[in-house]
Image 1: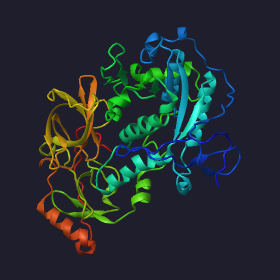
Image 2: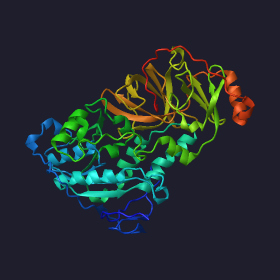
Image 3: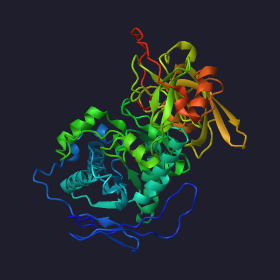
Image 4: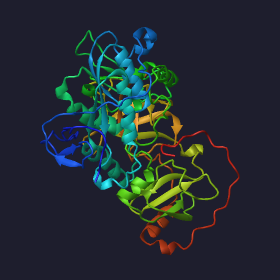
Length: 491
């Protein structure tokens, strides 16, 4: 039985799906002081936590003590009612304090997306208790109310289940994009719709430009001032309806300045490290999560150029195109270059960086455009990000229809890239403006890594009966080769 030493009341949510309408109210958790976990249907409401008493200075700072440019993305002087997503980390905490300093009436919300009791033992290392403790302490400094919102079921159905299915199909999804679209600014936005907030804010590094003079003019998503930390890639699949309700106070500030502000505010989490990895896993390795959800199935590793049987693996779903770590093969570096999904075969190569095998052409589906879902009028001379980070490519985008009549984009980037993985997102930009994104598809128009016929034949044989292949070949160690600088999508 789960016991808890803080007071929260039950939180009501509606199930959220981008494909379905809202259904009837659901059962949800109710925590009472030092009592066992209960389930009960209640009237729609939120739970307000009792603030912790922090044994330190209150950390309050007057507006005059803050450089005005730090408030430029916080809509100062408007006295708005703002819902602030607070994770317990430094970024969202500084965002809250900036909005408070700008004169807004803030309510903080902590989203609880950790898994239900069935997963209690497996998720015992998840740090949500610490996150919530820090979130409460930050709110206590400036007497901002904090609500705990339970979105575990919504997260499982709309993010985690999708991730598992995509890995089963051999693709590499991006949970951060899905979490922003479907949970933080989807299910949560719907859940608080009756509370009449003017805006919803978070600690994302991005900038939203709203037009207050022309009501029908669309809001714009722009790159932040910190190109290394910029998170517009993770926000690129938002709709215009979602973007209109958002503000990001950190969009005008660099990460090192955020850390300085945290120190100036004397935040209780000012020295806390930034979180890494997938948001719902905590300290658990992603491979452990995949193994639990999908299982393991022995398969073979073949060299793409020769068909040599190099070793065995635990299942193709543990590997992503461009991945280097985890192969455990001598004489490398080895890279995953292709996968045979039906036969559970992983193809690898040591020649991943040779110029004749680089990709400049790929297709994207599930396209969503931020400007009321209208495609850009000009599709030439755009910029494209195929992963989070400061790097982008100049590109041309050509719109086509697939066999089912759906919209598909053919993307030609002007430089070479080898980390294109099906299931990841490609985000498109016009200078500093993010205009939308789509999911990278499996079809490469013959631009994929060439796998020799012998390797394809052995994959069919070995996929049916590994014993027919005998023992793996002895790998010869190659002289060290200086490769181009490259960061794989999931290294």
